[in-house]
Image (cartoon, rainbow, N blue to C red; front, top):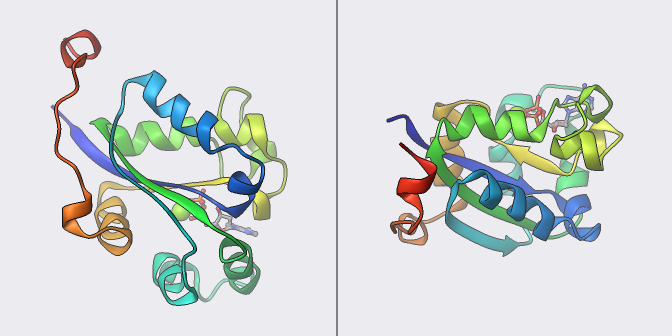
Length: 151
Ligand code: DAT
Ligand code: MG
């Protein structure tokens, strides 16, 4: 029933501003299931691959400098429509265009400090999860409250 996995990453500004806990809380509260989580200082190679589709854009160098400026919290969340719903929870790419109640709308102002990444399609989610995690790092488990979250 549309069970999907999405790649979510708290960017270096979110880590520095101690938003990791609040962000995890939002995904837990919504009912999504955590299937992978790691705290890493990603290298430029990984980040270049992660943002490969943006490499011709003028902001690419500053984007890379920003996302490589410190550790990030990388995670995979699973649930019904997790990719699309994750994007709704994030808000718009430009935080100033994001509604209050969204992560960017509550915690960010500039597009170059927008706190969090979330996959934009099931295809990119699968690509990003494969980039950031080894298969054995994705944990299959059953949530106790499944029948209370899903009908
Ligand atoms: P999103 O992160 O919402 O998926 P994206 O994939 O289009 O947005 O771009 C990736 C990141 O690149 C985005 O979070 C911030 C940066 N970025 C995007 N568009 C930008 C722009 N016009 N100017 C500066 N930075 C931008
Ligand atoms: Mg994107």
